[in-house]
Amino acid sequence: MAIRPLPGRRSLLKGSLAVSAGLALPAFTRSGRPAAEWGVQTGDVTRDSALVWVRSDRPARMIVETSATESFRDVRRMRGPLIGPGTDFTGTTRLRGLPPGEQIHYRVLLADPDDPRRTSAPVAGAFRTVPDRRRDGVRFVWSGDLAGQGWGINPEFGGYRIFDAMARLDPDFFLFSGDTVYADGPIAASAELPDGSLWRNITTEEKSKVAESLAEFRGAFRYNLLDEHLRRFNARVPSIVQWDDHEVRNNWYPGQRIADTDTRYTEKSVDVLAARARRAFGEYFPMSTPRPGAREGRVHRVVRQGPLLDVFVLDMRTYRNANSPGDQTVDPQGILGREQLDWLKRELARSRAVWKVIAADMPIGLVVPDTTEGRPHVEAVAQGDPGAPLGRELQIAELLRFIKHRRITGTVWLTADVHHTSAQHYQPARAAFGDFEPFWEFVSGPLNAGAFPATELDATFGPERVWVKAPTTANVSPAGGYQFFGEVDIDGGSGELTVRLREMDGAVLFRKTLQPGLVGQ
Picture 1 (cartoon, rainbow, N blue to C red):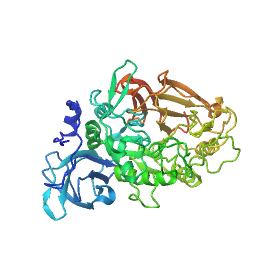
Picture 2: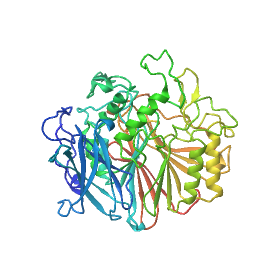
Picture 3: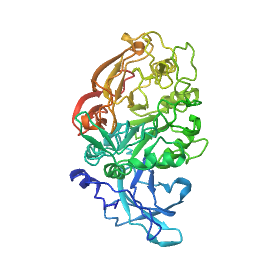
Picture 4: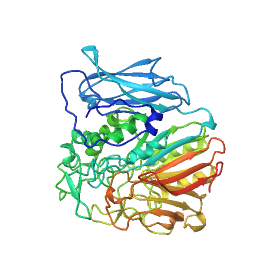
């Protein structure tokens, strides 16, 4: 899988983004020079810093060069870590002292530890640092659910071509809203489509079964990087990444034991699987959290994007209680855990950004059932009872009440998870619980996974499904359409926030513009 020289960001967006006819698996070898065949990524970019990621094919010293110009006329060089098998040959380097609101060109080289003169071919990328000035505006895209239900990289379909449509919008960053991989979803060589034709996947050994070992989890994350579109997107668009269930196992929660009847798993402790998955997750994404294996490592965080935007990245998986019918009248742990909920309230109150995007990896008012253990349990927040808050709804009610009474302006909820796209408006006049101000929740996805019908709404917080696009049958393949992403565009002059829900080719399906400075709308 040879890495081609990458064009500049602007020329990339104007030029052809067609994938090659086939994708070859990399051949690892100890001869010659190190190679960075999995591309580069940047993550959690700030006004003056960024994390740059790479993977080598052998032990190597990571070196990052930056420049204000694509020609790399004036180069600043940073010596990164020595990367090796302890992190599956992945590494990140933090760039510091960058100018705010500027285009940064970078290239990564890998040097042989025994002979620094032997270096890899450079792999280049670009990103924009967060602006200090409000007038510069902010544009980003979001989605989730990549390579689920056995629908993997199909070169005949064009691979993960939805990333091309997102790249054409020239976003400042990509909010990856969970289910970044399907560690519990094996990828077979082919699957039959409704018309009798075959969907043909690229396959790997690690993706032939559910992930249990650390090597298999690493292989699940590595699988997606075989796609040329995703690698090219990663090189040009920074990411803000969160996780959900499929990074580990469908509908998992802490302390869960896998039933003996599920013979796919020899490791029955979900906590053991989650620890391995969290390590691989940290190795394969550039995130501003402690490196893999750190006990204090966490996914939830605030990523500040200048005076217009703060992104509050939630973790609705790590701290949740066990899935249940969700009918408790007291539920202090809920879906966020007390510590994370207190953190979120505190950070929302401190935020001075015009807009506060709450990046939730699961929806609030959509009923997401869990029948994996043979009982009708609740997987997300809503539990189907339209009355007063119960179970995990109690924690969300506490948060919504806090936002209202502290008069926190500009909150918008973004999520994925349910494999369709929709816009919900929450209104206390329609709700059983009315102590909150109106707000919007926008859903998008999947990226390259099965699409599913729209789920039932729970009336506790008064949601109205203003718009939706979803199939009427379950697990529609990417070839059948229903692949989605969302765009958020914040105008630097007016401060207006416009959400556009888009299809795989970029066509706009729904648009909503929100006004700044309001507690609810």
